[in-house]
Image (cartoon, rainbow, N blue to C red; front, side, top):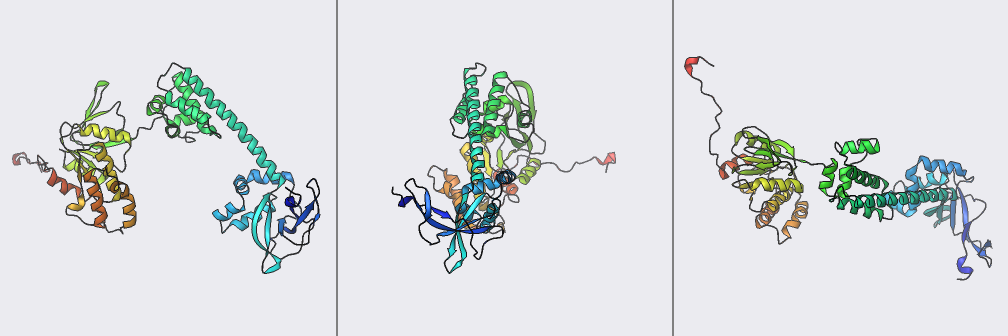
Length: 453
């Protein structure tokens, strides 16, 4: 590369008077400079102005720049990202933010001359970090490297100790999570601390009274971290999270002639028969077993019809979904369905209702899926977004393995052009599908001779 190829564009020592310069800044002409054999600039190559360098006429002192960046940490990321990123993300505010950072001594701005007026500044093209700002960012980068090194060491050591421990032979998923974290280029110190504390607790037999207790003990704040969520995202199996006491079990909602028992405790047994519901119990298949003893099982999306049926159709076992279900809930639902004579699934006849029903029929392949749009109903009055409905239903309609009843339900909802809510339709539909074996007595006949009202 020749010396000519390495000629720099540098600002002049003195500013010039030019229109459009923001208050607090001065404009220094940018010119191409000649260089000597060592590449050092000597004199301007010509008088042509290549642009304008905008900065304060008196640069802020280095401690002032450092204090500004310490007080405005969000500006560090902005300055590091550059003008192009700021202009793309915040086009309306970009110029004002750039001028503010330049006045603070964080950046020097580079602008063009106005193509229609050489005595005015034109568009901003980029900025350059000042030396004080570069020093701050370099120091932070060094600190981050030190933190990363400590984090890697913490995760690797915890993985080794847990792998060598004989206290729990099923902790492999936690060991793997720690080793994956240790292999990351910039591992999260918070995640490492959670995983390492979990490993220590497994080895010492500690039991936390929930996720908030874990957070309070290790982070001095019960809401600082969600350890169960972090461990789940890291691939740690539920059994380990249950052993720690931080596992969030979730819940299920049921009503009707359902018996709840604990397989490990013969005396732990309760019946919901005759009680209005739905009742909420933990989704814990290890300690809770369900049976409806041959009663029909009705799986319902919305709460109001679930409550209504629990009072008016006490012959039916009711499972209230309340939306989408997790794998544990679906596992327990399938186990309950195995004790029923038949399972009926009723959701809103809308795109999300189809997907919710899809979860259930996947868990219970022989469940009977009901499209309320095929029964007397009133269309939902709110506007129907056909495009969005097609997007939501596309995975079902495009998947050849989708159960035929589910595909038919999806196609019917899409073709109908409006949605059907289940709340006012469920009870009469069920009365036709599953006639009640008895009449609920609502009036007590009192002997006249007793004189009772």
